[in-house]
Length: 77
Image 1: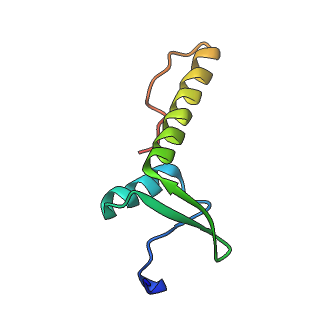
Image 2: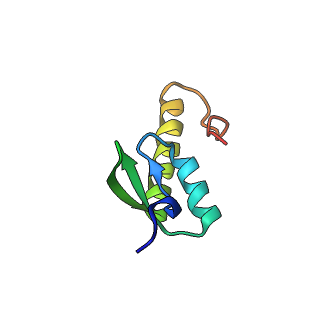
């Protein structure tokens, strides 16, 4: 069993890009999401990439509907 102090986890309110960064940096494919000290979910890189792409599509669709030229400028770094 892995000692608790060595676990790599994310918090429920962490943003997708931050969690993806941690997973990439640590070379892990699945990460437990913690909320109030308990495991809330287990996410994979594929889950997060899907969510990130959906956010980009929604942002660009919203810009298009408002008559603006959709760009990637509003994507957080």
